[in-house]
Length: 341
Image (tube, rainbow, N blue to C red):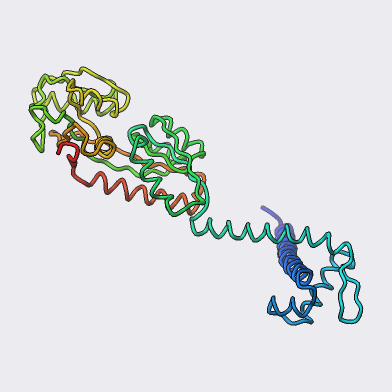
């Protein structure tokens, strides 16, 4: 137990320090005002003109100059009646005061832009499928009206993204790894799900179907992610349930490389919806791939992760919220086939 007198002494010390801080801040504000008055007098050459420009009375301007001289311990003007003649020290102070006031004005402007989310930095880490098109496209539109915003976009695997967010060094990560409850002290996470789609070449026998079943792909050469990824395992189970052979010909770490083999007519593939959307937006009407719903369903999870131990800036918070809305709109939409038309 802390003795009563000890606790009271601590409170008194805190109150004294608080009042000292308030007095310091008050003096800082007053000194800036005094410097502003001094600069205006030097610019205009008279107290009356400075008072008029600053919308203050002449006695207030004179008092401010006197207070500045007192605080500096230096006479800045030679006074003859109402006439003020700057001494050499005043010209030196003018250069310093101008730099200080301009810097403060710039700082205030920058803080205002930060508050209004027009300035700042955003560091984003995203998995390759999203980094190829969707994330840069989104970021480009997000900063279109924010010329003061700087962006770092890193492309990493999902485990690497979690490590970067865990280090609290990036503002947001987008990956396909669900964050364990045990690691929630390092992350904030939003989890989203969307069923995968089937990708086949436009002239494939199944290209006209809005939905392709696992049985339709019996013994068809397939592309998929590496063994051990849940999409591989879920797709394999879907084929087993349908009594179809899962004939894996090409495996890749990410979905995007599979599209090359699909366009060559060498494989079909069950891919996530955002990779499909990326491919369609990159290739448009020149695309040579048809996308269809897949049955039985194979779900793909997306995670938007943010650092738990570092509060986001207003700009980063706006970015994360906007990205979440963007992703939800994409994954709620049905697969389009603009490239197949």
